[in-house]
Amino acid sequence: MTRFGPDVLRGIAVEHIDALAAGAALLGSGGGGDVALGSHLLRRALAPAGRRVEVVPAAGLPPGALVVHAGVVGAPDVLAERLLAPGDLARAVEAVVGHLGGDLAAVGVIEIGGLNAVAAVLTAAHLGVPVVDGDLMGRAFPGINQTTAAVAGHPAAPLALVGPAADTVVVPAASPAMAEALIRSCAATMGGAASLAMYPLTAAVLAAHGVRSSLSACHALGTAYLTRDPAAGARALAARLGARLLFEGRVDEIRPPLAGSPGCTTLTSPDGGATARLDHQEEFLAVTLDGVTVAGTPDIIVALAVGSGAPLRADQLRPGHSLVLLGLPALHTWPPGTAALVGPPAFGLDLEAVTTP
Image (cartoon, rainbow, N blue to C red; front, side, top):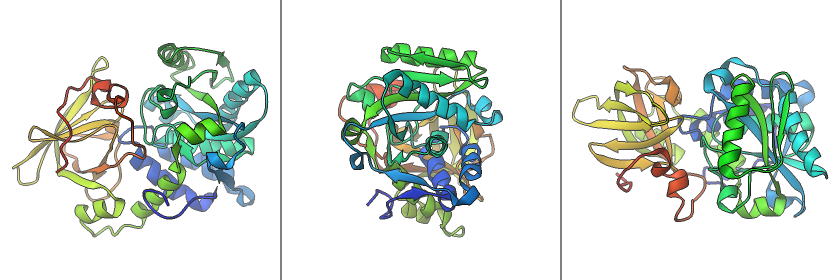
């Protein structure tokens, strides 16, 4: 059983894409890129002849089997304009496998939130291998070291990046900080975005240190969202998704992130009696109501547009938007001492402990 439902995915076909994409958008916590782009390409890949990508748990693979994690990296606006090339994703994985030697058993999901949830499935479809039912973040995070594998001491390298002209860069070894810097630099040189393969792990390591059943949980969450009653209120929707209703209100002011420091959005309740501050960078980071922090990373914050119910990314918020803010539990319980890696301090936020309303 997953956190969001009893259904365990055994395979992904066309009929699963809408729910998978919806769940990934919610788990993106306001970031992770445009899921619609990836789901469109995945539909094109799977529609002919009713293709299906096998989904396997890491524990279901031989202990020494090689799993390479695949996705994309780069500026959201570039990723929104440039079509993903499944061949580039596959080439990145093949470059890592070629460096290591041996055979690829499956593709892993870097982050279950946002575009990369779908990108990994697309990569597996192109390579003709299974995708692992899990990920390394349990949501979306901006840093490649913000993973369960990194916490367990496993490096991202060997890693490979492939640009739109099939230019390929392989990094055999790098510290977490240097790997991050090299990836960002290469992506910028490749036009602002690149296909990425990293964290080559054995199935045994992934079973021990990865987030389990992420694809199943993502699909179940997306199914619950898509089958909601549009006429039901925000509180009923929160209950259906296993979320907390944090706030309902109108966006009054948006201060964008500057020089790596988080931005914030101020909202006011319909009656004007309460205010909320939504801190965000690439993802939503925290919600503070009248001075009390009620949600914070690594838990997931969702902003839904009142009326359509569509999940909005941080870069889509505009003054005048009426929003429902929900808090979803993270798919992974991060161990004590990781706040500096995945908590508010990792993003320069000095907040009091989260208080559950």
